Image 1: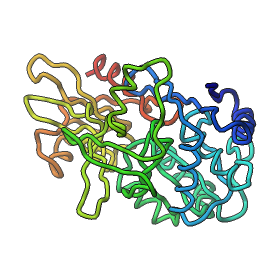
Image 2 (image 1 turned 90 degrees about the vertical axis):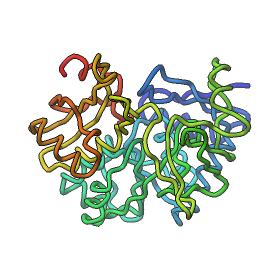
Image 3 (image 1 turned 180 degrees about the horizontal axis):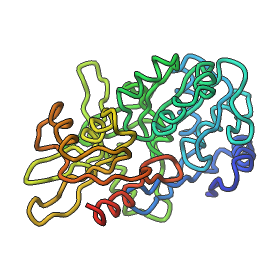
Length: 336
């Protein structure tokens, strides 16, 4: 069985994917995971899995059309942007080369950091208002960010998924057609259905660990409400055990980002002789630790409040727009 691993500048990737769509059905697409918490994995996706995802996305959004490529083309989110556009009969708009489209009714996928920056740009906001939908994924989505987008007249749909699920497979908490979501041991999110990957190329042991009885075992914790809507609580390993208490780093970071003096924030756990792990906030913005602790304690248990704060000019990011967790941990260990 042959595989295609997209590579090169965006225009070249578009050409590769267009050829792949027209080619044999048994040629798999191989994309890398982000590697935000370890070495990237090479995820093999069958054509039927990707096209099933493309079709289910269009049905859920209620429309199809041209897509704007604003993400790296070789990761699954960028690949899906290209495929959705090509399947709809439109070459994708390459944002860096062509800018925002002039017309209305197009689509774009962004990560939260991108959207936050674009909402500060009047020209970008005017463009995003013309979009049919902005798909937002690749990381935790703060309620405040969605509120800002809504107030600006930008239609946002939050997505959850992974390379292993052919990209976003849960839209605003509800699975796409054919996708199954369940909560397993320890609150771990499990995903089933026709969009799942086939294997980690060259890594059968990790494949067996991730694919169990037809389910993909994610690294994320979540819960399902009575209507079957999924709430993602963060990565299982994002829980910082400090002083014997479980502190959800994602929830603390989300609260910190609501502070008026904080432009961006992430939270990590740093080894500590007294506490086991020390909760450290890495923030963009000038604000004192006591104020941040009081701010967190006003919404959550005070035991969740960070015990140290590190101020940076910007949050280190991976090429796909996700926070670089390893770099964050290194900064926190060195400076806290």
